[in-house]
Length: 327
Image 1 (cartoon, rainbow, N blue to C red):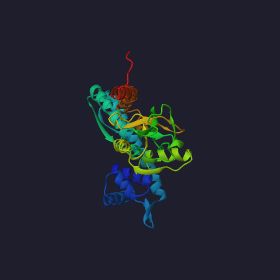
Image 2 (cartoon, rainbow, N blue to C red):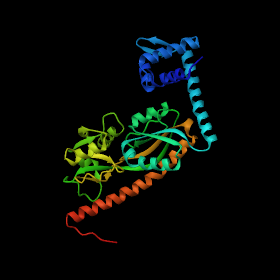
Image 3 (cartoon, one colour):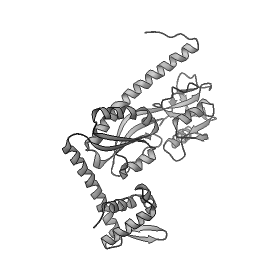
Image 4 (spheres, helix red, strand yellow):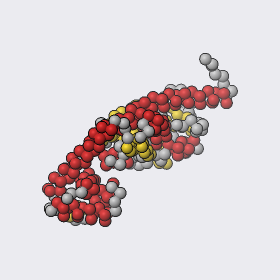
């Protein structure tokens, strides 16, 4: 008898290429995964993999069974969707992941709405990177994920994953308040920053590719002195005068008065905020209500940021002795 956990392992092995990676995805030890694979081969009565050097390679029978495993898992998820529809009210557990700026700025309101409107639905949320989400959604560890797709580093979509753009988020330049360009009324050209030291995202990440891509297109290689994908750390570094950075416009930076943000006159200086979900779960009622809540909140968030930016501008004017107009 072929067990469902063993079929999941076979599916992950084909997706990831190594038994170690498949075991990690399923939260198994490599030893447990090896025993599970051996038991599956005994149940199938035929070799599913063969060793080539230090790696495993699928046999023809293994590839055929892995294809069936993918279809079985897809059908199982669709069966769960049908069962939830029959019950009538979204219920069960749904897992949502989001990148930092969305987890902080959008998810709290989404969770509040879902708790009020669908009390039988248990929503579990997690802060994840785009790279983690790309892996977790197809593997079933997350049901939805909200991630960034930068113009300079477009998102790679995994097979079986559905995407929807929620809204557009411009990228802005973050500068120390005393920087020579901090009072620029118009946009800053990236070429004007050729001699600056930069704070960028972690190397290899989508966010980490943003600054190098923008600078290379402007004709120079950036001097990246510090790297972090944490917006709060990035803001603290900029505020302390350790470099300039590119930041998403939706990031909550109002609590960093020693930093200002200005527009960038550069192609590919922006990102789409994208939700990822599995094709097999698109019709699930719980997924649909979560997606509807995500669609509602970015507009409110952008309005909040606009109001906060206006308040911060007024506060700076008052502190500096300037006059503001009422009305």
